[in-house]
Length: 446
Image (cartoon, rainbow, N blue to C red):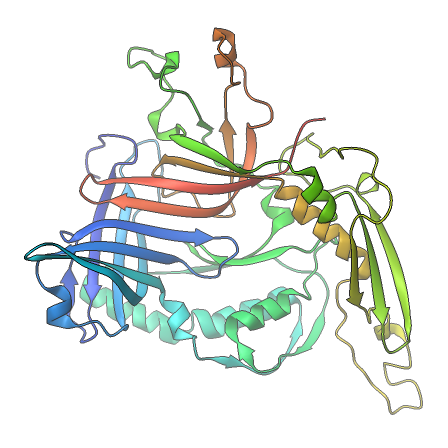
């Protein structure tokens, strides 16, 4: 490991450009900045890289949209127990912002996405799947995302770059057996289609399919918010705080300080009411039977898992009436009715694909609104151990001019947050990385 100099100090081992003709070029000295993006709501990693080109890279190799960028880096921080270098491969699909800042220098930006996206971009799924939703999705990932052909491509890349990219699969099990006939659709639409039928033991189905730096994941949000938070707590301290002094023996590790933050979304009672957090009414219409079922949801009468223990959302006032109403189609009872299972005269069989029960519809919407009650953006020193879907603890001091406030936490801002988006920004000139996090949190203390 290179010597550690400052928080976010990064060892960038490899930045290799594979041109459309197969030539392998080290572009580390040309790169000015690099951003890598991941999101819990998007199935692939994305990136952009800005170059100051003084060797005529585009002139000599051209750009066809078939190029590949190989990246290998790690944070040189003794407090982090990283598993080694983060190794990624991106398909470069776009180039933009070309400009000259000197006679013999050209600036431009490449945009890239995980190679798996381009590998299955034209694939169409059209078949029958049986079993649990999680089992179906795992089969699709193995067949279309990381098949043997994809592994062979990474092996070929490793022969030329000495960087072997490996991706894992992490699937949370769903509840209930299904039989689904998939109409012709793309791979990602197919996964979203199956996800609509997924359920969990808590009957609050909210599953997320995404890619992080380790691989592809299909995770239950209920389980994510109950996992242990990241081992270190991040703390925000103003520059004039006493613990920022270099001579303070109790100075907090610089690697785990919050550089800056912004609360993008805070408690909004009107929005919460409209989204059905506190009370909702669902009308489930069965067009075959020509009847309907009405379900009323009351937040006060339901129990949800929460990101922060002993923290509850409090309704702004007693809410009455129909704050949120929705209409959905329902055939949840058809699987037990002889009319639809072949028992009626023995010739009519619907063989329905049982959807999530109507009773769970409002619970899911309320839970989703609850855990996104606050959205916080923070910037911290680079940390390659953080991934979307992780819980992290933040500590903010109370905002006050008194000295005592420096030791008192802001009880509304502090606590556990779930990471939903990450942007790792690498500055190659300074060999430093900053990690920008978008995090969500459920709510206030009563």
